[in-house]
Image 1 (tube, rainbow, N blue to C red):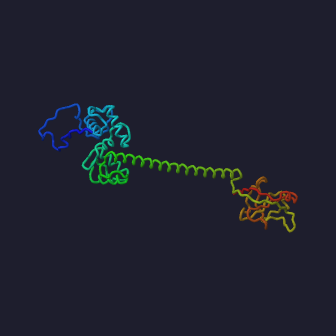
Image 2 (image 1 turned 30 degrees about the vertical axis):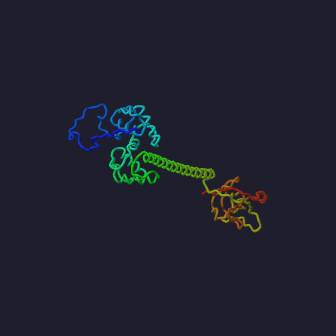
Image 3 (image 1 turned 30 degrees about the horizontal axis):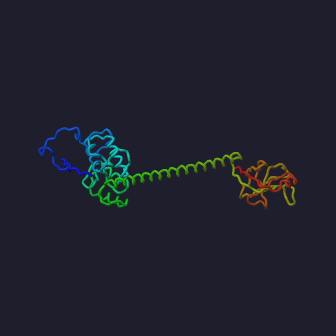
Length: 311
């Protein structure tokens, strides 16, 4: 690397120009008041800041001295891209706060936009808990050291290319993780909503089925049949229906603990009956259907049927 003479500026000396007894003359470059890093520099820009940037790039061996002209041209853009690529700064050919901060190597006493951006990045990653003010003081210095230790990189308290590159990578990972968590949360909410919709749909299906059967409680039972003409039978049901006098009565015997007496009950394939009788063997999910004669009762046998208690 070719050594360049140190450039002494009034900012470096810290004394006003007029007090020093010097007069300045207008020139094409250097007439603006912005400091390097206050704004992004890109192709087409002509300013003293571009010239400062080019000098930094020349010191890095990325730009020829003859190309230091204060104009952000293709050669300058390529040099910026090469520097960004080398230090994982995000390749866009634009000299923003990250790139300029890395080139300048920020430390205590520095100020400006690159320092503010540095503080913002450290804050978003949990290393700096104060307002970003653009002043590189002891707190910023300590935050940089803590970050460097966490990334297992050179610990010197200076924010140079390695530190800025690590900051950008860590910030991208953090954003990616947050986006992933947000996506998983969104998917979980969608899944929960879908499950709720399915449950509601199932409830509607059940309600629809019950509605078609008279809007009642449906259960499966073991069904048998009986007649009024049997040995020891009075022919009168538990609720007082005289079956001998009403041989076509639609009556069933039930367990009142399962189907309340007096209920209307739809029996699968047989019609609607009144739960008007009980029986010693009719316990649980069992019913006994009244038939007008013994032959029909015998033919019915024992069946598994679905009944709906209309309530």
